[in-house]
Length: 203
Image 1 (cartoon, one colour):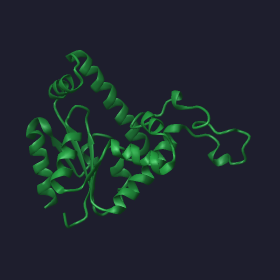
Image 2 (cartoon, helix red, strand yellow):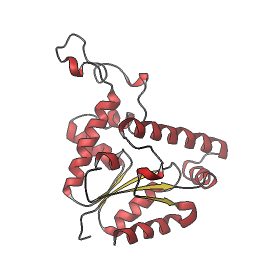
Image 3 (cartoon, one colour):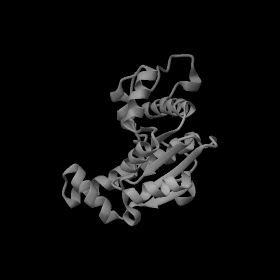
Image 4 (spheres, rainbow, N blue to C red):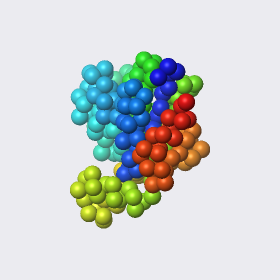
């Protein structure tokens, strides 16, 4: 693609948002960052990938606090940064990595509050992928090999985690149409239809 485009995709769990992002990147001939972002963050900041993944799109909680990655030693002089938690540290690392990735050129970034981190980038387009609950349940049943009840429970949990994480670090509300440039239903248009709509927007 000739023009630089940074496409940030947020998604409801089970909506197929990740597949939309991967398909879009493939058709545009650019890189899609999802789990790759975790590995890149870990490598660039010298921490374990497990540590990054443990805080990935998860809400801040007391369970995430602890030494040495959590609360700092209260006897240190650096009082401004005395108290912080692992989620905040990982978020700052990911934010730096996301900005570096965007500076390299066109790409697709899945989740991780990327649309807010890159809100001042004129070439960034933010997209929210959603779907009807019953369609999401069916997709999760198939991908995770769960029954309907457990799939619905997992959807509620992950959506709640994503919303909490997003709303903690962004001034905009997760899933609210005014927070994004475009919202697309895969229940209405399917994965391929969503990709085509985005490609048309980019043309």
